[in-house]
Length: 149
Figure 1 (cartoon, rainbow, N blue to C red):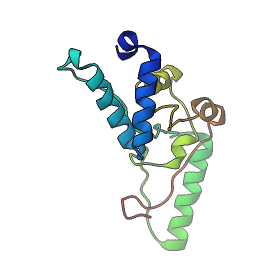
Figure 2 (spheres, rainbow, N blue to C red):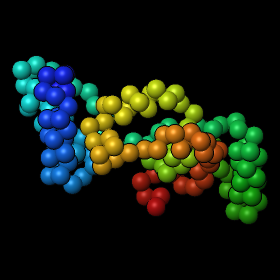
Figure 3 (spheres, rainbow, N blue to C red):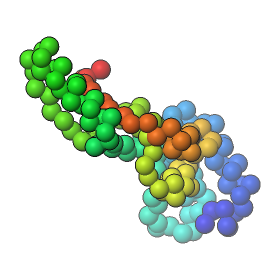
Figure 4 (cartoon, helix red, strand yellow):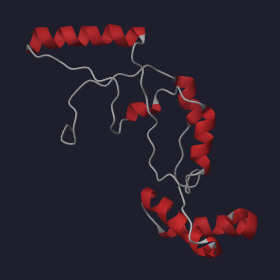
């Protein structure tokens, strides 16, 4: 709507100005969206959905043969050396750098993400094509929780 009614050049300038004034990636998305709603106030009230950075793509490589073999070895070693039982969780719902090692999704979903992230390709980007090319199996071993670091 904003580009259609005010032109790409003006909207780009507005976005760049907000980004320049806003240091945090997360707040950039929020403030860009807020600024665009100020410009487009004639459509208010409105519900605006957008993505705020950072984004960590979901990764689940359960049942990959190499992963299964590694899990068996880790579990066996853990039990033998430390006399502890480990618990397998198929999906890690936290933030992990391994999110950038494997891409099993639909690239059109990432285009939707890009188009709905106000600061994407300005101060934040994700190399989706490179991640898809890597597509390495990933395995997280260790404690879970905010104090695990």
